[in-house]
Length: 178
Image (tube, rainbow, N blue to C red; front, top):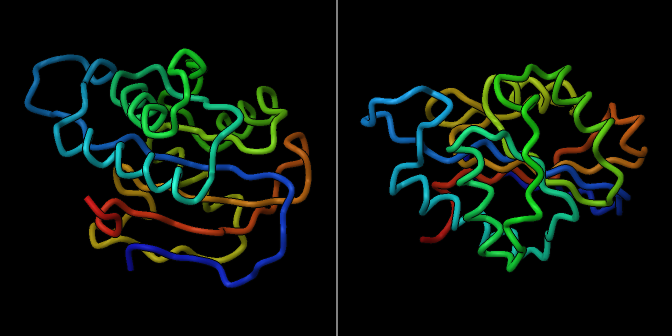
């Protein structure tokens, strides 16, 4: 299954958008931190940005790992949403973070209604599974969040109390139009 949408229409106060960076280019000989996106990754990041736009999901805050592939993903999404790329907050703790670190970043940095967090596995998957109460179907490659996958979570508590969230939608790039 490539897209999951909840049928519960209860309005929630806060939204957390977890976006795994798009497909990076392993053919370049450089340090992991500096690996850029592949052409396929740039295309997928734009698709996610367009999907967010059609859903009127415009983040108030964008937190990104400073790793090149994550930051490029955030920039492509911003372009599709007409958001100034300078509004992206590069948070060094997101790179190679586990779920606890990501949760701490969110609790300390977020105060707005809708936050987009662009990061990496396995930390993003761990955070997703920690915050929701039910299992997430895996993609064909056995991951909850393959590259460029976006999980939309909703919760009623504020960011400082972020614990239980509801998975509203899980979008994987293969489910989006080109």
